[in-house]
Image 1 (cartoon, rainbow, N blue to C red):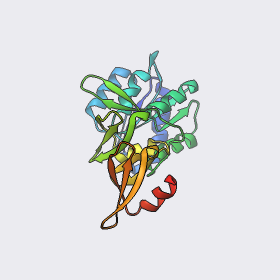
Image 2 (tube, rainbow, N blue to C red):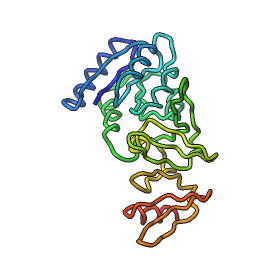
Image 3 (cartoon, helix red, strand yellow):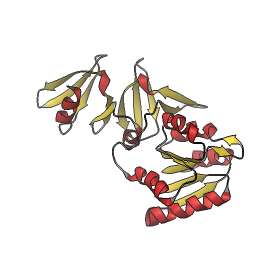
Length: 232
């Protein structure tokens, strides 16, 4: 695990660091602490990470200025903040968890363990997927996403208007974040269940999902019965 702590209070940062080291043990490869938004952005752009622990108030600057950049990355983001009223917005952006201050080790460990779990872990609906553009971050409303295809360590978002956007998160990481409205129907696909119009069984026991717009995407053999049961 490669982890970045973004926190302006050194006492709290040291506490988070101490707990994180104790929780991850030998699986922790690097742990860095940065106390400014600018420094955090620079670090994120130039280093490979698995997790960012982000405060939402950094010397008076809003952590939301960094949040869109963070959630567009390949890693997960966990908020550690006293601003509980901002939790819903943070979840809508696509954070893995929101740990309210003050916190204890058990609550932080609960959040950190979510990074190790396969499948859905988020208890709150996200509303946007943040996509990196050349000089900006674009928030794609989740309601516009029909299905998602794995593309190596990246994913491709297929939208209702026919456009396709590249996301830096893997299919596994997006599956953790997305609500039950999306199902893993194949090792390479996540599909919005409300877009399913028909399930076809083709020659050679191949299963295909036909979407309302006519597009066809494969259903894995091991997923077929489960997807059919949830659709009917």
